Amino acid sequence: MDAIQQEVIDIFTRTKALLQGHFVLRSGLHSGHYFQCAQVCQHMPEVERLAQLLLAKLQGVAFRTVLAPAMGGLVIGQEVARQARARYIFAEKENNTLVLRRGFKIVADEPVLVVEDVVTRGGRVLECLNLIRQAGGVPVGIAMLVDRSTGLAKFDVPSFSLLEMSYPTYPPDQVPGWLAKLPIEKPGS
Image 1 (tube, rainbow, N blue to C red):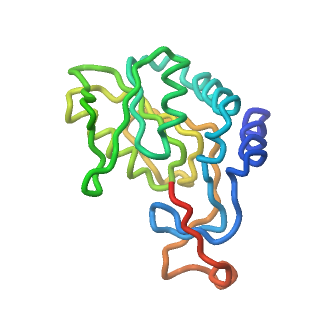
Image 2: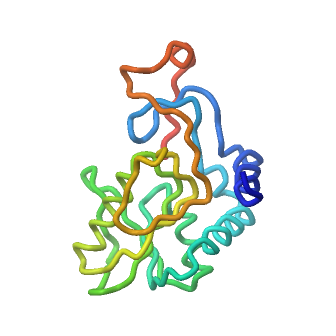
Image 3: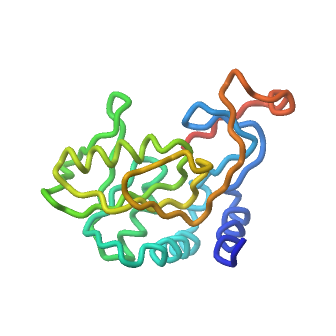
């Protein structure tokens, strides 16, 4: 583990954003670990630092707009946009599908960066990529704090993460006994 990854883990641990127990993730999978990024996002000095580290990984990625899926990507997306002096918009759920509301528009050929907090399967990121393309924009990259997909989340644009954590996840019908004994928590994303 390099120094930057250790710094990020220290930030998550210090702010109690990395939890242990029995969790049902947004994806429906079960895990013994949970990244509750909302905990770190209430501490603006840490959010500023995480955005700095993320932007350093994006050298050479040119974007005019940051699009973040609500709720998880809201704070880090806004801070990445602020530091990059880019426009910031977000997508939110309507009838269980991400949509652009509040008058947000993406124009033809607009280069857009998707920013998310944690990716497990990548569903919300894929929805954001589709929103960008449907509007005529150009998705140029994906920036995330944590990629916990164990390499399974694949995208057709470059993706960048501060951490790649491979804590195991389990379908509901395959939860191991030791995990099933713990009370289930569904903290939300």
